[in-house]
Length: 245
Image (cartoon, rainbow, N blue to C red; front, side):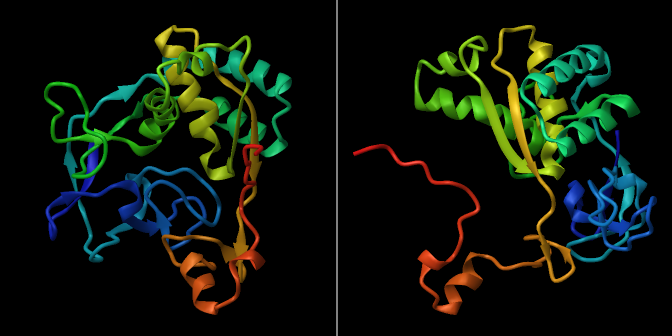
């Protein structure tokens, strides 16, 4: 595949390290994977006047060999599964719409490796200098972290008749959990526990813009600490579940 390469620091640019003008809404600070203004999912090569986020240099195009998951060949099975799961699990409206828009557009083979020096190494000969794409790797991590916790991990992850999987996230991560990860599971032809219900929030807004840690927009843990306000006052973004004494 053709990627953007920064000649100044001699490295391929991950999606989030490319910025430029969105080809759909003309927002000038869109990132290589998504536009924060219109919400469109992007390819770095789609950006107008792309630049390296690290040094502002205009990158060049360079070819690199990668591994893909063939989502296009799995589309009919993903559609069949998602229709049933969204009804039985009562997915919220935004989760349904995002998933349906991906399927309606038509799934394409999706790259699951990256030219980076950090990340999970690819265990395939010829790809020793590459790592797994984070949203392919992270979802598999749900299974692997359970397997590292207990040898009986299949009681959770290969027991769809007795276990229901609930997931909670912002809407920008929905397609990775309703299309890509389920497609990965379906593609193995094994009896996986799959998504039942997904809870999807809208973007958190701050001073008229989208809350973003990478752009420094919002209030974060270090800011809260610096105020001197007792931690009990700050609301938690998720519930804490405690074991009974």
